[in-house]
Image 1 (cartoon, rainbow, N blue to C red):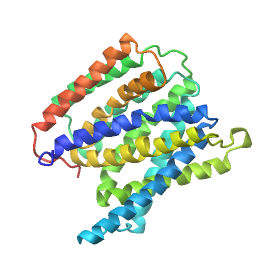
Image 2: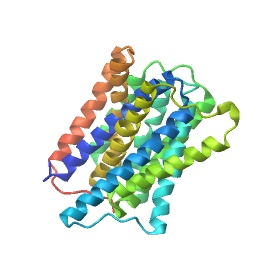
Image 3: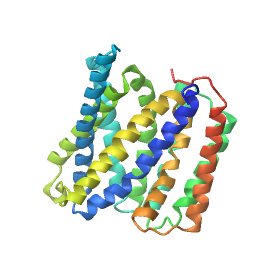
Image 4: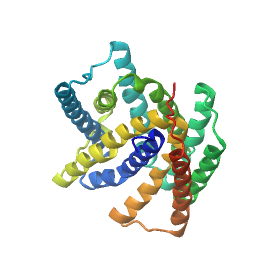
Length: 310
């Protein structure tokens, strides 16, 4: 794995997709304890920021003991760019998506959002000059078909909510493109810490300016707070770090394709932890996605040259 950064990049993105795919399950447990979306998300990103500060401190201490270069806080301009990735990019995508799924089926939301890989590949081609290869196009088609099939039964459409999810898909595509340009300029723990801090800051401000009718409600039980902690660690810190690390190795186009494994992870988590039905369309759709990821992973494992977005 160490001799093949491409294979490592694929593995990191799969780990990231699994982590993000578990987020709805942990969020559902938090809601069951009495929390609402804003309270859950504020607690999620605040906890994630505190955890990343601890992780960064440990990395700093290890670097000092090993005589390696110490992680440093970036210059104000770069700090501001990273902060805005979280305060705008992460915050907007999260709050709009959670607002949308209050009024439409999650299956429909997933189907709409995962036009995102197409947007990312096209933007990478347009903005970064990364022309997609034939295998990327085939894998892209397979994953989109798989996601559409797996979502299934996508009724209860609300026009406003559909538009919100479309906005999230486009916004998240730009978020990934910008991330691929900004994050390589700083060490990973520092970059993730600042992004998490930016997202937490926006949710804190949002909670202060929203009307009392949508007041922040935090979990009311120990189990609810445990869910938030798992949401912050397993479905935020780990997948965000592995996403950025993997994207730096294989680029935004391939990352967007592999991330379509996320709804598969969500389906599996829903079946295992929430007793949701495992329907034939979901099995068939998951097969399309897993096959595409497998083909791309195999192709990448044969390519020992490192791919980094410039």
